[in-house]
Length: 283
Ligand SMILES: [Zn+2]
Image 1 (tube, rainbow, N blue to C red):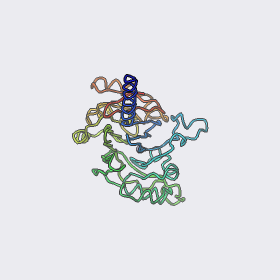
Image 2 (image 1 turned 30 degrees about the horizontal axis):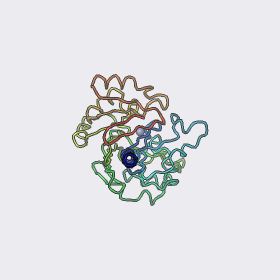
Image 3 (image 1 turned 90 degrees about the vertical axis):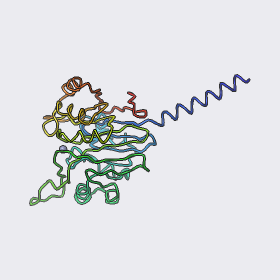
Image 4 (image 1 turned 90 degrees about the horizontal axis):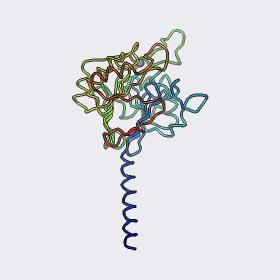
């Protein structure tokens, strides 16, 4: 009987331990292109550049409901105003009530020109490059970093006399510092710039999500250089193979990283990887 009790207690303790470890996981999902979701250990969902209806997303193919896989979102982070980054933000914001994190000019024009819900775009989460904010009850610190790119926002209401592209503020990248989780850098659409080293000095980047598409942003070999500059412990490519004219695969990025001895992981569109603390656990 005593042995049985002991075994039962041990079993319950093991279960509690397993659940606690599972609860400490940060989940990162790639939807294709620059779109990622990050689910924190406490269950908050952050979407970055949510173009869920991009051609690579398996959950958007064949008339599937691309939003079915995103039942909730607490925050939408947008690096810059281009259509392949704003993506489906407005529809998702209306559906989920998520709060917008972007620069003020982009936020203002998304409200004015594209009907982004104003209450979700006029909060303390509007920020500028160089700044940091705390979100998710302090579980996540968001830093907005510089990006060398452009940032116009499409104006669907433009008449024949107006420009189709309105001002979208400065383009940016984001660093996300997650409590009991990794520090993640999303580069947006930036070109390589030497001051990325400052990002690496300031934040211990566990995971760098880097645009490798070339043509409009970093070529793969420069993206590998970016991984080195920010001191990435792991580099994951994005913004490739989505449409003609950009890098078709991650091969050259992977081989450049190998030369630099930086760990590389290619996610498949629709794939989720998990971090336990700062350690990546592939799924
Ligand atoms: Zn862009």
